[in-house]
Length: 289
Image 1 (cartoon, helix red, strand yellow):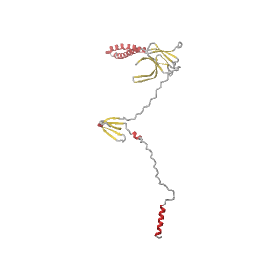
Image 2 (cartoon, one colour; image 1 turned 90 degrees about the vertical axis):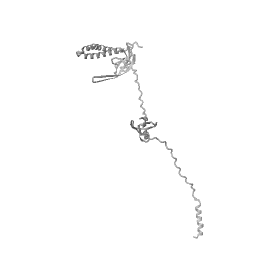
Image 3 (cartoon, helix red, strand yellow; image 1 turned 45 degrees about the horizontal axis):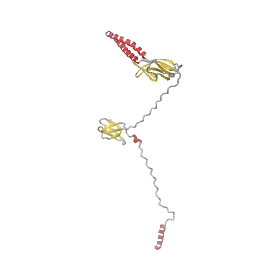
Image 4 (tube, helix red, strand yellow; image 1 turned 60 degrees about the vertical axis):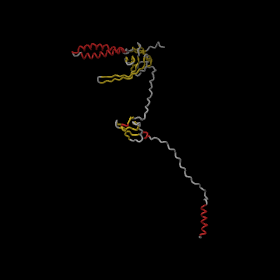
């Protein structure tokens, strides 16, 4: 093909390539939008990190302090502490230490609240073993009715011990229903403060209905005098008996016996008569409204 024919052909080809495509024009492809990043949650303290906080603190002389867990204290030498956060083992010379405070930052543990104490319900139903007690006094003295909860007896080599747990039920004139249906024992006491005169023990298991207890209050003064006289009598009798055996001390021994024996004979009855005494009897309610 000649050169002058190829020229129009090449020009037509270039013109055809320059025309827009007959297909639907496509716009430029927009880049895909990046997904929006979710907000980062607030940092949460690690339980392990929180647990690593030591309860101890070392105050320094320069006004600073180091908190952590003290692992060694050598007075006049050093204090070794594991520092919070880093866990660094730090040795502090003693001359830089102002004060060592152990467990200063220890967590406080709430003590359990004890359950509320419930007072026993007052006995109000009369019946067998639950009489309505009235204390009638022969003279004006403070008299109290006591219930015995338990008794303890312990003995050992040349010694014995007796103990009693009791509680007050009512004070004269009482006039209350007393529950003795369990067969427990009671006693009456006269006095106030540290010195009391007690009665013999008794039970109410077989009693019912109105019950009068006629009480003769004990004498505190007579009991004190009786205890003193009895003590002197016991000491003088023992000492006199020992001294009366040898001939050289027989005379002083007989003198002590002459004092001690009457002391025994007088002290024992004084203590017996000083105790509180009583009489139990059914209460006469025929004249009551």
